[in-house]
Amino acid sequence: MNITAKQIAEMLNVSKQAVYSVLSNKPKCLVSPEKREKILFLAKAYNYKQNTAAVSLNGKSTFQVGAVIDSFASVEGRIVSHLASKLEVENYTLKVSKITSISQGLEMIQNFISSGADAVIYSGRRLPDINYEDYRVPLLGIDREFGTDYYSGSKKVTEHLITRHGHKKILHVASEAGPFPKYLGYCDAMKDAGLKPLPVLHTIMNDQFSTRLKKYLDRGITAFVTTGDNTASLLIYFLRSMGVRIPEDVAVTGFDSFGNFPEIASVVDPVEAVASSGCKMILDKIKNKTLQPITSDFIVPEFQPSMSCGCSPLKFNSIAKFYSEDKLVSK
Image (cartoon, helix red, strand yellow):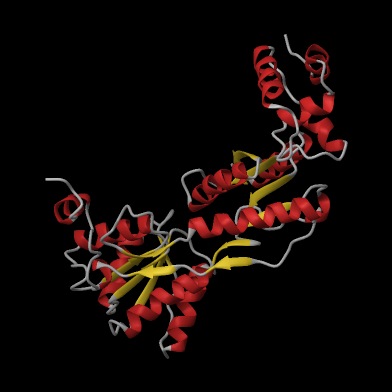
């Protein structure tokens, strides 16, 4: 049996609006704690389900936000995870779906809107051509209106290799080819130093990766800027299988550091700061009913040097070392 808000109101002799206030978890709710507890009990006992679409069509907030992302395991997934926590503090619920194709991603956005979401956050990288005028609720694109300044991060890494370690022949290694922000940052850092940028060496669907890597080494490449820590780890595997030492023979840098590879010099993705920015932007859009793209806010990440680029390792580069050196550990 599914109970309605009207039935709960009649059973407890309260207004239907009071029931909606409690079940929608509105920030300003004047219902007494005793009544609130009874409303929640009845709703749970009799399987109450709010008609969020009807609430939305009546112009009322459902305090729900949808998110359509590329991957749960990616940086986007981590950003959305932090976003969910921040929105929860503001009494909003974030519901997330994963994109498998562009058409399916667009359908997911429509489904969230049809179910009554106040706004939808989406992957600007996978759905870059969305026209906001086609939708009746605010949209916010990750890597379109907020995110990490990948261009600046990659430029920082390349500049570090040039100015700190004196590398002149540097290759950019990415999971896939294309003029993406990380590659453009590498190119501009090379040009600023009077050096020639090289085409991307990509890993995905590249049967010739090992052969091409060897050719670049034979041409005197001494450093590699990669687009991710996983890519850097894969590259190091290939290099070591060829007898190449890191960093004695070549330097390698990563990106999007999750702390999984502390020995790899890497750019630390500012996930927490990006999520804070996205939370503020989406709440502002909901409040002001903004249906157009707004001024972008991209956070410049920090570069964390480590052993793979030839710098000193972090103070605690392993759990074992942490526990052996930390004075707070009890004897």
